[in-house]
Image 1 (cartoon, helix red, strand yellow):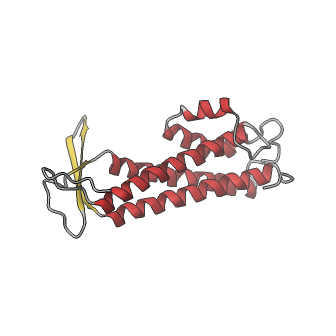
Image 2: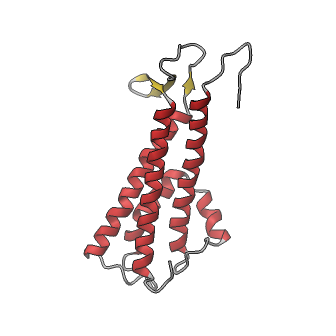
Image 3: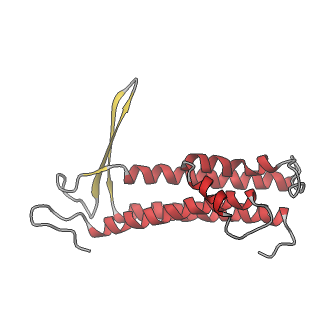
Length: 190
């Protein structure tokens, strides 16, 4: 899609396309976390969580969703049936807790990078492109340090690397959730 106007130089299509792809993949990660948490709010099912569960989870900020996801094994530890299979301190529990924490760390890192890229000023009209890179600028105001500007040259390849990180986070979220599901409900068909 050409977005050029004779009065303004076009934003590089490859970077714009990669940024759009990043947004779509990030939303998929957020949905994966929603379903991972929702499936244990409605135990024993791998189906789409009920509407009320989804409505509540959809209103949570991403950081809260990640926090709940990371804590799922601990939340379900010693819980009422159908969760008695979780035994604190067991190798299975420790592996699950580690898998959930790893998925949460990856999701948090992905969100940070996505926010850097999405909530930035792109200075393609004011700065020359170097090797297909576009200058990204972001300034933050800090109470003690005042303004903290950051700039970096961003290429489509750099955005594609962020997409790979989103995919890895989604994979870890899915694997952790599936492992917990299998432990809790070994007779359920995956």
